[in-house]
Length: 218
Image 1: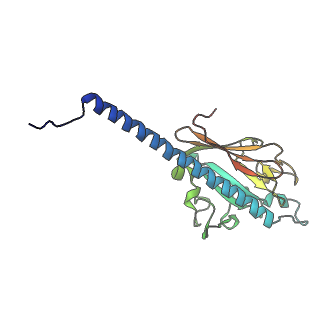
Image 2 (image 1 turned 45 degrees about the vertical axis):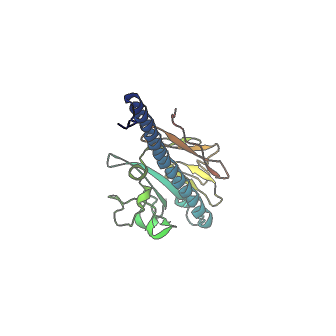
Image 3 (image 1 turned 90 degrees about the vertical axis):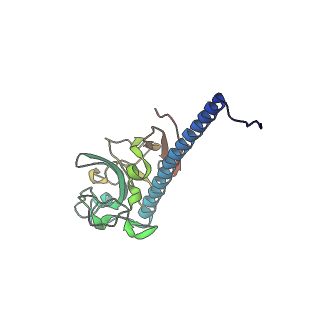
């Protein structure tokens, strides 16, 4: 009778363990991809906000509050007490409410039929860019503005006509140089698996760089 080779029970267990480890590593890598994709997108849109500020000088000698119209990126974390995590790029105007109205929002440079915001009760009649919803698209659970751009829990960055970054809500500024960022700004994105990645903005020059992801964030 011909002998048939087969796996022993121990060999099967070892194979199952190895497959389990491989699948775990693959899952972690997929999550890291989410984090990197989100960071790359946010960095791109920070640079685009800066670009809009450079080509659209808001100085107006007839308006003492002209600087409140600077192009800004606004990370929105709550709407009607509900936790969300998306952002909008806009230039405030008129009464400078601090909230983006439909006509104030930047168009998506990759698809001009859409705008760089997510629709909600305040701005429902827009064609949104769904990828700006970091929570549903990339499993991001938090975004923090730290160090040089930490300012009373504000989640906004604006740029002037020279490309210099500012912290806080332009609506609250009382002069054109108030809240100019003078030390490195750190924007931290945290994934559902608690890994994170930091985006740095250099003061004055507004240079934007992405750091390496961290599996454990302090």
